[in-house]
Image 1 (cartoon, rainbow, N blue to C red):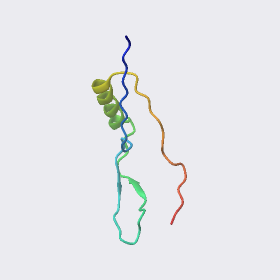
Image 2 (cartoon, rainbow, N blue to C red):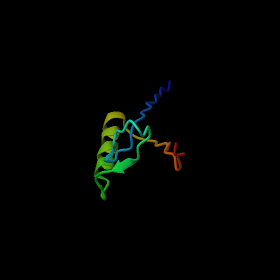
Image 3 (tube, rainbow, N blue to C red):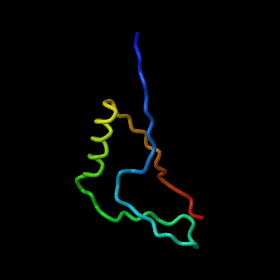
Length: 70
C-alpha cells in the first residue's frame, strides 16, 4: 500500500520589505528596506521547509508582474 500526503503553504516572499501606511493610499508601494545579496533569508526559509516537510519542495510563483494603479 502506498501512502502520500501534500502540505500547501502560502505566505509572503522571504525578503525584507515594508509599506508606509496612509489613509489616502489604499495600496501603498512596497519598499525593499534591506538588500540581501546572498539571499540568506530565502536560504534559511527553504532550509526550514526541508527540515519540517522533507523534499521535494515545489514553488509556484503567484507574483503579479504588473498591477493597475488606482
